[in-house]
Length: 261
Ligand SMILES: Cc1cc2nc3c(=O)[nH]c(=O)nc-3n(C[C@H](O)[C@H](O)[C@H](O)COP(=O)(O)O)c2cc1C
Image: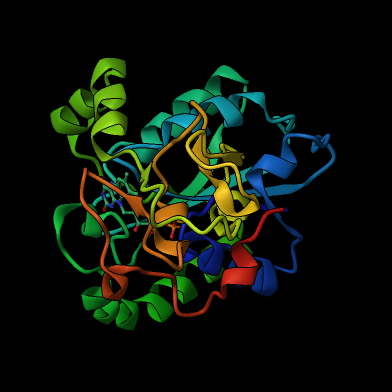
């Protein structure tokens, strides 16, 4: 079984290829939490890198997964370029559950956080040229049930960025914010949010039926799914509005593939 977490489809695209080629079922990580996976022989975890580490929300989710120490557990991490301490963090969490991570590798793809820093992820599409060869390597190693951790790390910087206070600061700094006057209440953000953290709520200053706007709860993990999927560019990040040409989605993935509800 392949479990994935994805904001803009990079990890979903990798997870989908793995599921197809390894003949495994594909499900979102959030759904897997509701299931007993102890009879699964092979479990793959596919997720993005955030701040050179495993996304904070995923740490908690993985620690709650019901998987057996007898399973062959592997991970494939997507990242812009540096997966930092992801694999070590995951290995530590799994070890606390008595599970040994058997295999890991990373796939470099466009960095979907680039737009928060005024850059365009769509200018990084050339990174896909190297993906097929990496995927072939990963698939053949997984078919052979290889026990190899291909890893990278960023040592001190990853460790520093992983401190809870700094992490909370980054979420606050980069965190998506709704621009109420631009929001048309289309529900895209509500449906793509992997954290189920967005609802539509009536604007207090408007009483007509069109006054519904997106409202964020407190579980945002800054995956940018909402920012990239908003047809009105009504969700800002890093205090800046987002330009349409900087909105990104993995070219293999359609918006409907990312809708979780
Ligand atoms: C908040 C945030 C932080 C990120 N930090 C890193 C990073 O430290 N290193 C890196 O190489 N890519 C980083 N990225 C880029 C993503 O890991 C990459 O684009 C990933 O493939 C996105 O996966 P998705 O499309 O499945 O959501 C970051 C992205 C976000 C949203």
